[in-house]
Image (cartoon, rainbow, N blue to C red; front, side):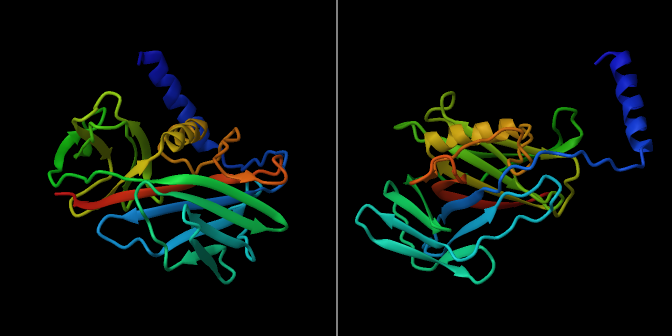
Length: 273
Protein backbone atom coordinates (compact mmCIF):
# COMPACT_ATOMS: atom_id res chain seq x y z
CA UNK A 1 0.00 0.00 0.00
CA UNK A 2 1.57 3.38 -1.03
CA UNK A 3 1.81 6.48 1.21
CA UNK A 4 -1.12 8.27 -0.44
CA UNK A 5 -3.45 5.34 0.16
CA UNK A 6 -2.37 5.13 3.80
CA UNK A 7 -3.06 8.80 4.49
CA UNK A 8 -6.35 8.61 2.57
CA UNK A 9 -7.58 5.72 4.73
CA UNK A 10 -6.52 7.52 7.94
CA UNK A 11 -8.27 10.73 6.87
CA UNK A 12 -11.42 8.82 5.90
CA UNK A 13 -11.42 7.10 9.27
CA UNK A 14 -11.16 10.42 11.13
CA UNK A 15 -14.06 11.83 9.10
CA UNK A 16 -16.24 8.82 9.90
CA UNK A 17 -15.37 8.97 13.61
CA UNK A 18 -16.25 12.68 13.78
CA UNK A 19 -19.75 12.12 12.38
CA UNK A 20 -22.31 12.08 15.19
CA UNK A 21 -25.61 12.16 13.32
CA UNK A 22 -27.22 8.83 12.51
CA UNK A 23 -28.72 8.81 9.03
CA UNK A 24 -31.41 6.27 8.24
CA UNK A 25 -31.85 5.70 4.53
CA UNK A 26 -35.33 4.87 3.31
CA UNK A 27 -35.15 1.40 1.80
CA UNK A 28 -37.69 -0.52 -0.22
CA UNK A 29 -39.27 -3.23 1.93
CA UNK A 30 -40.00 -6.51 0.19
CA UNK A 31 -42.76 -8.85 1.24
CA UNK A 32 -41.63 -11.00 4.19
CA UNK A 33 -40.54 -14.51 3.26
CA UNK A 34 -40.25 -17.68 5.26
CA UNK A 35 -36.77 -18.66 6.46
CA UNK A 36 -36.22 -22.37 7.18
CA UNK A 37 -33.09 -23.22 9.14
CA UNK A 38 -33.06 -27.01 8.75
CA UNK A 39 -29.53 -28.09 9.59
CA UNK A 40 -29.46 -31.66 10.89
CA UNK A 41 -26.08 -32.16 12.62
CA UNK A 42 -24.99 -35.59 13.85
CA UNK A 43 -22.04 -35.09 16.16
CA UNK A 44 -19.65 -38.04 16.23
CA UNK A 45 -20.01 -40.39 19.21
CA UNK A 46 -23.59 -39.27 19.92
CA UNK A 47 -26.92 -40.79 18.92
CA UNK A 48 -27.97 -37.69 16.97
CA UNK A 49 -31.54 -38.34 18.10
CA UNK A 50 -32.26 -34.75 19.21
CA UNK A 51 -32.52 -32.30 16.32
CA UNK A 52 -33.93 -28.81 15.86
CA UNK A 53 -35.43 -26.86 12.94
CA UNK A 54 -36.09 -23.12 13.21
CA UNK A 55 -38.70 -21.12 11.30
CA UNK A 56 -38.72 -17.33 11.04
CA UNK A 57 -39.62 -14.54 8.63
CA UNK A 58 -37.47 -11.97 6.90
CA UNK A 59 -37.88 -8.44 8.19
CA UNK A 60 -36.99 -4.82 7.40
CA UNK A 61 -33.29 -3.87 7.19
CA UNK A 62 -33.19 -1.89 10.43
CA UNK A 63 -35.15 -4.38 12.53
CA UNK A 64 -33.05 -6.30 15.05
CA UNK A 65 -35.54 -9.14 15.61
CA UNK A 66 -36.64 -11.79 13.12
CA UNK A 67 -40.30 -12.77 13.65
CA UNK A 68 -40.68 -16.38 14.79
CA UNK A 69 -43.09 -18.65 12.93
CA UNK A 70 -45.42 -20.77 15.05
CA UNK A 71 -48.14 -23.26 14.19
CA UNK A 72 -46.30 -25.07 11.40
CA UNK A 73 -46.33 -28.80 10.73
CA UNK A 74 -42.71 -29.92 10.33
CA UNK A 75 -41.59 -33.46 9.46
CA UNK A 76 -38.55 -35.25 8.08
CA UNK A 77 -38.90 -38.69 6.51
CA UNK A 78 -36.34 -41.24 5.30
CA UNK A 79 -36.37 -43.52 2.25
CA UNK A 80 -38.34 -46.17 4.18
CA UNK A 81 -41.08 -43.56 4.81
CA UNK A 82 -40.33 -43.42 8.52
CA UNK A 83 -41.60 -40.01 9.61
CA UNK A 84 -39.87 -37.97 12.30
CA UNK A 85 -42.09 -35.25 13.76
CA UNK A 86 -40.65 -31.92 14.85
CA UNK A 87 -42.84 -30.35 17.56
CA UNK A 88 -42.65 -26.65 18.35
CA UNK A 89 -41.48 -25.40 21.70
CA UNK A 90 -44.54 -23.11 22.00
CA UNK A 91 -44.04 -19.57 20.75
CA UNK A 92 -40.35 -19.95 19.90
CA UNK A 93 -40.36 -20.96 16.23
CA UNK A 94 -38.09 -23.86 17.26
CA UNK A 95 -39.31 -27.32 16.30
CA UNK A 96 -37.74 -30.25 18.17
CA UNK A 97 -37.44 -33.96 17.38
CA UNK A 98 -36.20 -36.35 20.08
CA UNK A 99 -36.19 -39.63 18.14
CA UNK A 100 -34.40 -38.80 14.89
CA UNK A 101 -32.38 -41.65 13.33
CA UNK A 102 -29.33 -40.39 11.41
CA UNK A 103 -27.81 -42.81 8.89
CA UNK A 104 -24.83 -41.94 6.69
CA UNK A 105 -25.79 -41.99 2.99
CA UNK A 106 -29.53 -42.11 3.74
CA UNK A 107 -31.83 -39.78 1.81
CA UNK A 108 -34.23 -37.62 3.82
CA UNK A 109 -37.11 -35.37 2.82
CA UNK A 110 -38.13 -32.25 4.72
CA UNK A 111 -41.75 -31.11 4.67
CA UNK A 112 -42.97 -27.85 6.20
CA UNK A 113 -46.65 -26.93 6.03
CA UNK A 114 -47.46 -23.40 7.21
CA UNK A 115 -50.10 -20.80 6.31
CA UNK A 116 -51.60 -23.08 3.66
CA UNK A 117 -48.27 -23.53 1.83
CA UNK A 118 -46.13 -26.69 1.58
CA UNK A 119 -42.34 -26.48 1.37
CA UNK A 120 -40.15 -29.53 0.68
CA UNK A 121 -36.49 -30.41 0.19
CA UNK A 122 -34.50 -33.63 -0.22
CA UNK A 123 -30.89 -34.23 0.78
CA UNK A 124 -28.48 -37.01 1.85
CA UNK A 125 -26.77 -37.40 5.22
CA UNK A 126 -23.06 -36.76 4.54
CA UNK A 127 -20.20 -38.30 6.53
CA UNK A 128 -17.05 -36.56 7.75
CA UNK A 129 -13.58 -37.65 8.86
CA UNK A 130 -12.28 -36.80 12.32
CA UNK A 131 -10.23 -33.79 13.37
CA UNK A 132 -6.73 -34.99 14.23
CA UNK A 133 -5.54 -34.61 17.84
CA UNK A 134 -2.42 -32.60 17.01
CA UNK A 135 -3.14 -28.86 16.82
CA UNK A 136 -0.33 -26.35 16.26
CA UNK A 137 -0.24 -22.83 17.73
CA UNK A 138 1.74 -19.90 16.34
CA UNK A 139 1.72 -16.64 18.33
CA UNK A 140 3.08 -14.70 15.36
CA UNK A 141 0.48 -15.79 12.83
CA UNK A 142 -1.96 -14.01 10.56
CA UNK A 143 -1.15 -11.87 7.52
CA UNK A 144 0.84 -9.32 9.56
CA UNK A 145 2.34 -11.73 12.06
CA UNK A 146 0.48 -10.12 14.97
CA UNK A 147 -2.25 -12.71 15.59
CA UNK A 148 -2.51 -15.97 17.49
CA UNK A 149 -2.96 -18.66 14.85
CA UNK A 150 -3.86 -22.32 15.23
CA UNK A 151 -3.60 -25.05 12.63
CA UNK A 152 -5.68 -28.20 12.88
CA UNK A 153 -5.75 -31.16 10.50
CA UNK A 154 -7.95 -33.86 9.04
CA UNK A 155 -7.14 -36.84 6.79
CA UNK A 156 -9.12 -36.58 3.57
CA UNK A 157 -10.71 -39.74 2.19
CA UNK A 158 -8.92 -40.36 -1.10
CA UNK A 159 -11.53 -42.83 -2.37
CA UNK A 160 -14.14 -40.15 -3.14
CA UNK A 161 -14.71 -36.45 -3.72
CA UNK A 162 -15.43 -34.64 -0.47
CA UNK A 163 -16.77 -31.26 0.54
CA UNK A 164 -16.31 -29.68 3.95
CA UNK A 165 -17.70 -26.89 6.09
CA UNK A 166 -15.38 -25.40 8.72
CA UNK A 167 -16.71 -23.56 11.79
CA UNK A 168 -14.44 -21.75 14.26
CA UNK A 169 -16.01 -20.02 17.27
CA UNK A 170 -14.17 -17.84 19.81
CA UNK A 171 -15.46 -15.90 22.86
CA UNK A 172 -14.71 -12.48 21.33
CA UNK A 173 -17.08 -12.89 18.36
CA UNK A 174 -20.83 -13.52 18.47
CA UNK A 175 -20.96 -15.83 15.43
CA UNK A 176 -18.61 -18.58 14.28
CA UNK A 177 -16.36 -17.93 11.31
CA UNK A 178 -17.33 -20.26 8.46
CA UNK A 179 -15.51 -21.51 5.41
CA UNK A 180 -16.22 -24.22 2.83
CA UNK A 181 -13.61 -26.33 1.04
CA UNK A 182 -13.38 -29.17 -1.47
CA UNK A 183 -10.57 -31.70 -1.79
CA UNK A 184 -9.48 -30.90 -5.36
CA UNK A 185 -5.98 -30.00 -4.17
CA UNK A 186 -5.80 -32.27 -1.12
CA UNK A 187 -7.30 -35.54 -2.36
CA UNK A 188 -6.30 -38.26 0.09
CA UNK A 189 -3.89 -36.01 1.96
CA UNK A 190 -3.51 -34.68 5.49
CA UNK A 191 -5.28 -31.34 5.19
CA UNK A 192 -4.41 -28.30 7.35
CA UNK A 193 -6.98 -25.68 8.36
CA UNK A 194 -5.71 -22.29 9.57
CA UNK A 195 -7.53 -19.97 11.94
CA UNK A 196 -6.25 -16.78 13.57
CA UNK A 197 -7.55 -13.77 15.47
CA UNK A 198 -5.77 -10.76 16.92
CA UNK A 199 -7.75 -10.80 20.19
CA UNK A 200 -7.07 -14.40 21.17
CA UNK A 201 -5.28 -14.74 24.51
CA UNK A 202 -4.14 -17.60 26.78
CA UNK A 203 -7.08 -19.49 28.25
CA UNK A 204 -9.48 -18.68 25.40
CA UNK A 205 -11.26 -21.68 23.91
CA UNK A 206 -11.55 -22.10 20.15
CA UNK A 207 -14.53 -24.31 19.33
CA UNK A 208 -13.72 -26.18 16.10
CA UNK A 209 -16.30 -28.01 14.01
CA UNK A 210 -15.76 -29.98 10.81
CA UNK A 211 -18.86 -30.90 8.78
CA UNK A 212 -19.29 -33.20 5.80
CA UNK A 213 -21.48 -31.51 3.19
CA UNK A 214 -22.84 -32.23 -0.27
CA UNK A 215 -21.50 -30.61 -3.44
CA UNK A 216 -24.76 -28.70 -3.84
CA UNK A 217 -24.56 -27.27 -0.32
CA UNK A 218 -20.89 -26.39 -0.91
CA UNK A 219 -21.87 -24.35 -3.97
CA UNK A 220 -24.80 -22.74 -2.13
CA UNK A 221 -22.67 -21.71 0.85
CA UNK A 222 -19.93 -20.24 -1.34
CA UNK A 223 -22.55 -18.02 -2.99
CA UNK A 224 -23.89 -17.07 0.44
CA UNK A 225 -20.44 -16.05 1.71
CA UNK A 226 -19.70 -14.08 -1.45
CA UNK A 227 -23.05 -12.27 -1.29
CA UNK A 228 -22.49 -11.31 2.35
CA UNK A 229 -18.99 -9.94 1.73
CA UNK A 230 -16.96 -13.17 2.06
CA UNK A 231 -16.00 -12.34 5.66
CA UNK A 232 -16.81 -15.77 7.04
CA UNK A 233 -20.21 -14.64 8.36
CA UNK A 234 -23.11 -15.74 6.13
CA UNK A 235 -25.64 -14.16 8.51
CA UNK A 236 -24.90 -10.55 7.57
CA UNK A 237 -27.28 -8.78 5.18
CA UNK A 238 -26.90 -9.99 1.59
CA UNK A 239 -27.48 -7.63 -1.37
CA UNK A 240 -28.84 -10.44 -3.57
CA UNK A 241 -31.12 -13.41 -3.12
CA UNK A 242 -29.34 -16.72 -2.56
CA UNK A 243 -31.74 -19.61 -3.06
CA UNK A 244 -31.32 -22.93 -1.29
CA UNK A 245 -32.83 -26.34 -2.00
CA UNK A 246 -36.24 -25.71 -0.39
CA UNK A 247 -39.16 -25.35 -2.82
CA UNK A 248 -42.77 -24.28 -2.49
CA UNK A 249 -44.84 -27.09 -4.01
CA UNK A 250 -47.73 -24.90 -5.17
CA UNK A 251 -46.26 -21.43 -5.67
CA UNK A 252 -42.62 -21.24 -6.81
CA UNK A 253 -42.69 -17.44 -6.55
CA UNK A 254 -43.33 -17.62 -2.82
CA UNK A 255 -40.08 -19.47 -2.12
CA UNK A 256 -38.44 -19.88 1.28
CA UNK A 257 -34.91 -18.95 2.20
CA UNK A 258 -32.65 -21.49 3.84
CA UNK A 259 -31.31 -24.96 3.15
CA UNK A 260 -32.07 -28.51 4.26
CA UNK A 261 -28.67 -29.99 5.18
CA UNK A 262 -27.73 -33.23 6.94
CA UNK A 263 -24.14 -33.56 8.14
CA UNK A 264 -22.00 -35.68 10.36
CA UNK A 265 -19.82 -33.28 12.37
CA UNK A 266 -16.66 -33.68 14.43
CA UNK A 267 -16.12 -31.22 17.28
CA UNK A 268 -12.99 -30.28 19.19
CA UNK A 269 -12.14 -27.51 21.69
CA UNK A 270 -8.64 -26.05 21.73
CA UNK A 271 -7.40 -23.95 24.67
CA UNK A 272 -5.02 -21.15 23.69
CA UNK A 273 -1.67 -21.50 25.47
